[in-house]
Length: 242
Image 1 (cartoon, rainbow, N blue to C red):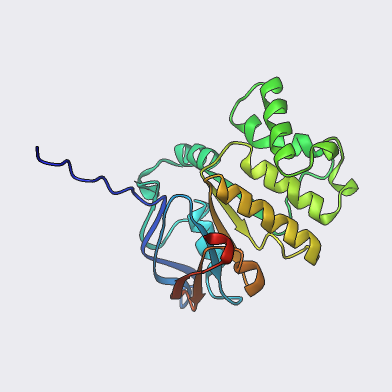
Image 2: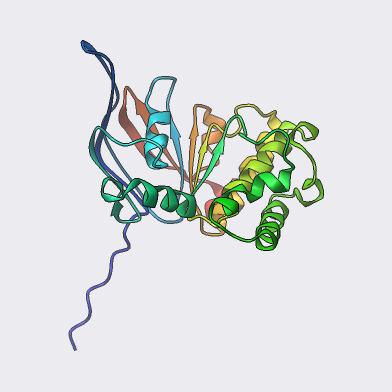
């Protein structure tokens, strides 16, 4: 019997020769990304590093479908995002991608659990199911006992834990984190990175944008950008990776 050909899994993220040019004026343009190629497999933990102006935040916006390339292709789970209508793209983004930002982006006068519920409200889930899933997400990051507190009643580390809970409450395959420890002390930074490692161990793809080498070291692969180009892409050998 002729063996069936082995099916090669498609990457969850594939960036093909992507450029992003911002037109400042008729005579001035800024090339933020200049021919980027990047492939991220399902379940990877990748840190993207670069100095200010390297293009890392622009790349994250494209990976998160918040911006579109000027040229090249971006395939999300095999689908070319340029072929997806805007309304469908917003739904896809809500289902497949969770976002964590440096500034937390929590609604100030809303409790932690209500903040975590927001993506589920956009998805049309009923109140009881929203509350159940939000409480489970907060429990996963050690915040269940603070679920009724306002952001102003939480420390920076606790606010970021709530933001991570909001990012994972829709059970996305991918979590994009843009400088998620930039406003945290060393203890809170360690806590947040430990949560990302647990999420990755559970099968989620984590893409971490950072300029800090010690933060990037928690990933399993580091991609470095400079002047809008990938200048290195290397795996990390860690003792806990065995």
